[in-house]
Length: 510
Image 1: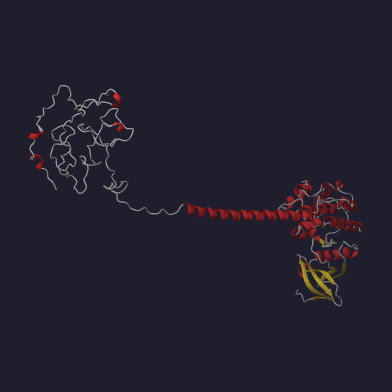
Image 2: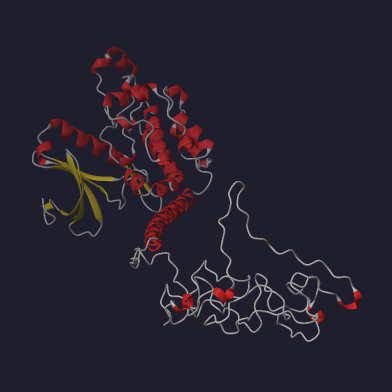
């Protein structure tokens, strides 16, 4: 059927729900603006007499009810071609949908819900009917807390004791929804008003914690759990649930009818004086959501920080390990070899202790200081007739000149000797420290010394001023002696005058 179709004087506006046998439509009656609901039997189900009988049974019970928490039923029409009845249109969803979509709101309305259902079922029982299908799907709940109990298709009268005695259990069919079915119905025992009390306990448990007390995928196991198992306390699943709520719901779910409250009026009296929760469930749910949102935000922030840290660490690693720069190539001969100093960088050779400094004894004059020089002696010059000692400079000589053996001379090629210089190791014959006459290239050469009157003789002690006794002179080092058993080769001593001058003319002079 389309939205523009009409059934009798009712215009079909909107399809609210569809089942296997019936449909629920929002309709309008011609000449009236009041919205109504219609329970329409489907064409395929219309041919089954059982379905026709159930529709008529439900409409009859509904029309007999006049409680504000029970849906109102108005008109019934059942023919071979069509079957329906109209009822009050209650613009709200059922309790099952609210539990799934907003559990905290369902918890917040639980007290008023239980009061309304307890009163509605008490009225239902007073009319002599057992509902037998109390469940969240058959309870409509508005935002204002108004309740409507619907669906009376399984409602029946309490069992007759005489009929129960003559009827076998195997012939009694189990009817109802397994999740909310009372244990005595499963055991095929007598149907009493306590059946609705058990089903109301399952509804209350599901509203408290969000799930029914027993759940399993196997239908037969679910039935056995109702008969055998004890449900978990709701407060163990939600700490905000009060102990008084635990006590009431567990008594409603007792396995034996005698252990449950005696009537719906008793249930209503307990509910009115009961606090189901320690704190407002809506407020608690909001705080929990804020904590969860904060934890999620912190987790996301930590995740982003970890990514940034990882990126930052990789960047640091790249900066920490730059590409090595190529080293300049150096010739093997130049590596780790200092440059040879030039002649200008070479310090002039000096003779230690010369010229004498104030306070320093004069070489060859033991105990004599520079201020105690003999009369007529010039400071810095050797006394007349004093023999040359090793390490001493002749009068007027310059430091570093004449060149020493093996020392390069500016302007000469390596290996050449200066004019008038003997090769290393050779010395003209004569006295040590004296240069023979005519030795070329030696400025300031010392001629043969002739002792002067009053001058100290070589090797003789020098008289001290002030009448001090003369000090013994330093011993003159002697020539090295040959080892024992060997005789040194005899050298022929010649006077200086016999040395031919040609010996010096043979030297190459540049």
